[in-house]
Length: 566
Image (cartoon, rainbow, N blue to C red; front, side, top):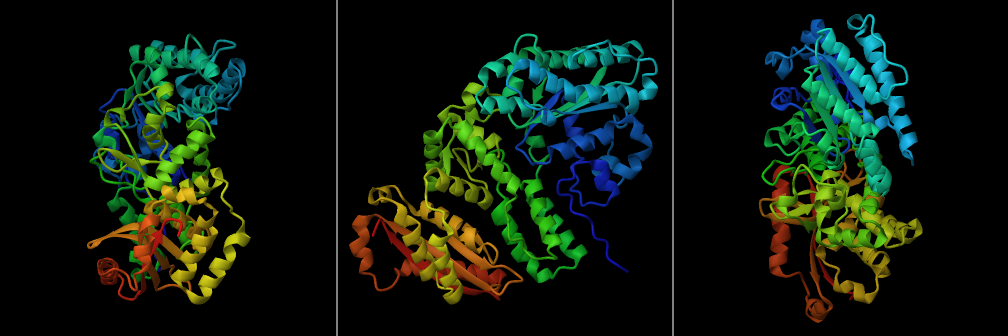
């Protein structure tokens, strides 16, 4: 008997398809009853956090046409065993604002909005719920707001089942106006009686007329909703509500169970599971959305890894970073209003690894003027998914995926040499001798050698870790995985690299403790004939901890002293 192998739902956002095609699904349906505690919830998360799939889940749950399918769709899910009483009670209208094309003037932007909304309304009345609208007709030449108003009026006059409205990525096209600094057009769209503001006023009126019985709105930033407030003051920003903080993304238990199931179903060697789990934690973990919340994984990016892992028959993919994530770096330049501000912000993250934030700024609403202010960058980047909460006072990079992206962008902005012929000889030699002296010595000469002597006044241990990491990932990620500040019972290991299962380097592990000193300490450090005993014990402690979980590893231990520009 062949073991069942569930499909991996990367880029699949249709709940019905996931259930019927037997994709792996992390059950988030328990949050439906939480969402029902709010009248018009607006829930924000960065891109690729599973917002569209949750919208599709709601659509399948509330759609009255799917009443006969409820057991099939939800019977084995939390909400199927604990229905709220509102299941299959509504005509559901789902709108996706992310496909609205941008324009450089109000007339064309309204046309693009209408080109997306109008077919949705025609399909709603003429196909999806045709039996409820037998003699319905739209008034000629209507705007999307007028068309929605027509539907709401018909529902009210004919005592039809209520409407449940879902708006996915409500701010996608307005965010493009914000980040391209087209403030005049953005102001036109969100003020007065222009089409978007009017559209949301119609939704508000629909609640007042009791024609709309429920609504769920997703997006990335609260800016547009903040500017629409006077016309849509019924919205409830629920992004930071503790009861919803894990609604999207996977917590540790969910992520580990996901991996366990895939290993079992696909028949992968169980002894490799701890290594793969360590890789996943290092690269995809770390989004803490409230100071006291547990960290979560970005669900789509984790699924990207698992999808490629299964496609490659249980081997780690060469490319650990979803290329779609790299496009988000464009936000940094737009946010910082130019290269110099971008450099300053990147310096903070690459050198210090963290940014101070004011917890009172961590709120569900802010406007576009705050978004571009320097002291607000940590919050702006948090909403974009590029930083996360370290504690009550600092934002930090959530994982090595973002670390790699930030350092890569830092190198680009600072015009640091990227030509392969500068670095390839280092890595060719390393593969011959597997010597950390070769690897770090080459990095020091080829990469740090590009910096002026005075630059070393601000270079620190964190900068060394981050930039050495990015360079090694660039050339060795097909045979090694890399970790920075890995936690062990004896402390945090500065830097480590581990041979990937299935390669000739599997079982090979290098661990490094960096000790950075200013140039004035160089004479003292140069006199050392061996690493300081306390540094040796530190590295030996990490090695002992590692061998408890991975006794088969061959560990090479190093203490590297770096002295300014010496």
